[in-house]
Length: 441
Image (cartoon, rainbow, N blue to C red; front, side, top):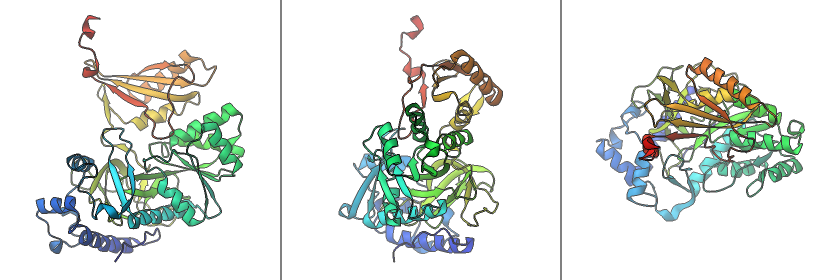
């Protein structure tokens, strides 16, 4: 019996029944064949015959990204994570590897088709229709990006326009010439294309583009960033969330901007105290833990995503009963920085910097090489902006809102790097990065 096709219109009672049946079916398929999870369940002393859901979900072992990477390091290149023989797999993607080794993830034809079903449900939530023309502004490399969205859009009947292998100006001309109505990219790249359009004299707000679907990094639900993208394009931003390991699982609805609906017919979510096992009450921030229900070829059971979310307990204006994550993905469990006793998530600084219309790009260095950490912020302004005045205004805003002082400098226009995928705006400098004779210099 294959996994149930994901739907966005189920009641809470129907979702609970689907999740319980779906997890039982997943385990029955996976445990006899998948050495990674068979070992985990054996170490936990669990037998499928003894489990009943939803009662026993909390008894299942957690999975972490470190577990997956260790399995692939021990048995390269794919570890013992696969449910079926390798010959059954037809797709491979990998994570960007920004925080270490990339994680490779494979899909069978059945699992890949299931991901397309997920995307079709997400498109429905966002109001995508067959007459839309979708422009995909990304490189189509091994990063999963919008690969599944491209194929799902074609399956839906949309004209899908690939934007790989083009310069930024060429991408803009291509999407305009082909009358694209929806653009899919990272928030950073949406801002970059708007910047190029201004330089090229292109009036994006007058174009046919009515929506921008963004993913891959924070921004879609950071209000200042969202407002900047929408102003630059004259189009509505829809935030989306997914991971290489989980596939596409969340998107904004048309009726209630500022949150993400989780496609719970494709996953069983939990929101737990970060690093612990207890759930957080609705309305409080916690770590998103996911069990995927339909990707049997490469399953995830109680996967600690590291994403910080907050469940909105109120009914959504769209009428769907899917969990809604207020503010989308609010940050990462592991990206919090402590500066002079203050806890800082990168999105908080992004919110401040993107409120300044003169700031085109920025880069942040957390210098921990001395006794007291220092936050250094480089900002790249629009041409003809008074750098010292801008730096002083940003410094004051950071002090007023984040309650510490940063070293703000202005660099020449064009000095900071750009990316079409995940932007690398943050760097750390530690004691080991300082030459051993630095104290004598």
